[in-house]
Image 1 (cartoon, rainbow, N blue to C red):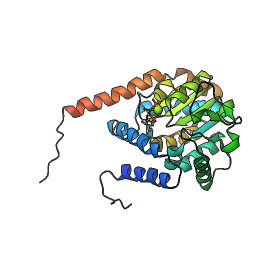
Image 2 (image 1 turned 180 degrees about the vertical axis):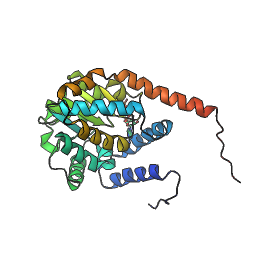
Image 3 (image 1 turned 120 degrees about the vertical axis):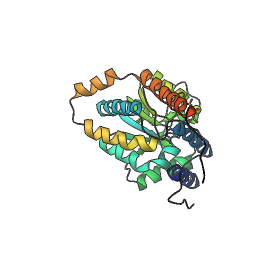
Image 4 (image 1 turned 30 degrees about the vertical axis):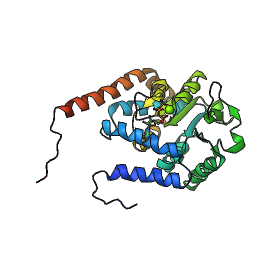
Length: 259
Ligand code: ATP
Ligand code: MG
């Protein structure tokens, strides 16, 4: 689809187009289109930019991934469609494994996602076909199926655009869960250990840069960052930011004028 270069909503339309192309390639589920729309709405409320509370969460996430024994990046259709290069780069700089984990799991979609990530330079993709042979207790969706070499043994799991149930199940298994979710009120955002309230397309490059920056710092310093991090405060700040923005906007002139 052609999007004029001067269209005021160009960036947002280009992201939609990536999701639509992902759907046509068999990577994104039909339901993924709706999930993207829910994200867009919260991004609008946040002013479509990365705020300080997200930067704080990204720093704690980077420290957790670097100090983890078995970090895993859990990938679904939307994430693969939006940030394939970043998923691969994040795995490379951090040594994390990449695992496909789908709510609407089919063999075709698992393989389409794995092939798409391989086209973007990924070497090993867990969670495809028979590799997803272990199960997470207390979960009944297809997302309970995980790789015994990946999420099952992971101590830190990065879950961009996750479902709430699974985040809770992973927490109950004692794992550190890092979520990227634009909605500070979702169950995912509230159940995660660290919640990056930002668009995955903005958060992933920042997370990669932060990992590169912190990688060679002393372990004690990284553990200090994790200890001082307060996810409840970060979620409160995200909500306050939305509230303040709306309160300011509600006092300003909203109608556009045309001469
Ligand atoms: P939960 O299951 O966590 O309570 P939900 O059921 O409200 O959440 P889902 O449909 O499970 O929502 O997941 C979609 C989530 O992904 C939404 O919270 C939405 O804000 C978020 N989301 C969608 N697109 C993006 C994006 N590009 N970046 C970050 N978050 C996104
Ligand atoms: Mg959900």
